[in-house]
Image 1: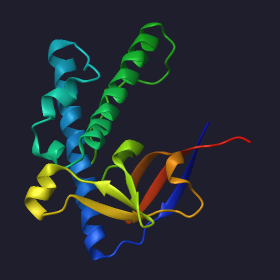
Image 2: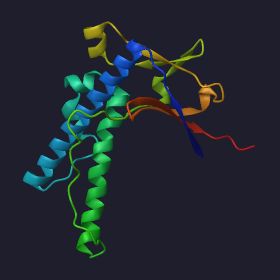
Image 3: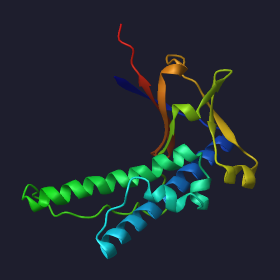
Length: 182
């Protein structure tokens, strides 16, 4: 079983700038994936494959901003939305839908998107979780990671995923953890 805990982050100016930048880049990468998947469907009547977007965008600057696993998570969310659409098309053909079916839409201009890191990308040192950044950020800004405080009520080994959620002009760290039943 898994549980989830959200922690409101209180970042300093430097960390806030990093989080805004990452979430903006996630927004752009998501829209790029949606554009390609929509064009593939509209022009070739094909659906995007699970790894197609990763292969296509792995040399893109928006992709290189992220640790590779975080970028893959972003693009797989696009794949999942089109896989859901594919299932809805089937349900629509069978007459099980009441509403009009629409392709997944682009995210609104200028927004921020969620960034997700699997546990294997994270490291714990001195009560801080080290979150890696991509090679492009190191090249541009000289940063290879940033740190977030480790919640005292969670064991680091139980963390399965860390999500950075932009919401209401704030940032939250969402920890997805394995729950131990005793």
